Amino acid sequence: MKSKFIKIWNKFKALLKQGLTPKQLAISLVVSTLVSIFPIFGITTIALTCIALPFRLNLPIMIAFSYIVGPIKFLVLIPFINIGAYVFGTEHTLLTFEAIKTSYETSFFDTAKALSYELLCGTVGWLLTAIPLGIGLYFILKGILTHFDKLKINRLTTK
Image (cartoon, one colour):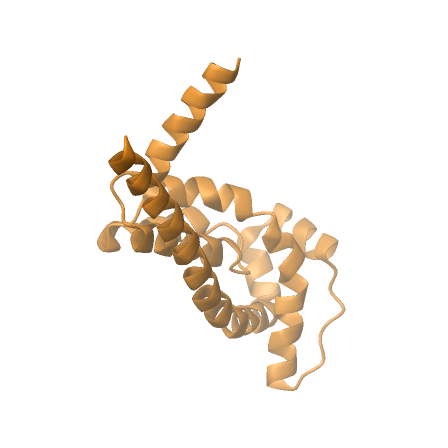
C-alpha cells in the first residue's frame, strides 16, 4: 500500500513540476488562486486558459488548483461586496449568499443584470485585496518551492 501511495505521489509531483522553475510554478498557483476567488461565477476556467497560454504557465495544475481553492470564493464573496460598497461610500444591499446562489441558479444573465452593482462592488473589493494577497502569496510560495527544489537538487548530487 505504501509503495502505491509513493508512486501516485511521484506522478503528482511530476505533473506539478513539468519543467517549470519555482518562480513559474509560484506564479501559476497565485494566478489560479486569485482567479478562483474572483467574485463572478462561471469564468474561472476560461480566464485561467486565457492567462496561462500566452504566459506559458502550467494550465493543468492551475485548473486543478482552482477546484481546490474554488470553495473559498463562497466565503469571500460578501466581504468583497462590503469592501467595494465601503469604497464607493454606499450602503450594502442586505444580500445573503443564499439569495445570490439562488439567483445564479435560475439565470446567469438575469443575475448579472440585477446584481450588477454588487458585482461591481465585489470586483473592486477583490482588486483591493487580490493585489496585496497575490504579492504576499507569490513570495511565500516562491520561497517554499525554491527550498524544495534545492532539497531535491542536493539529494540528487549526494547520491
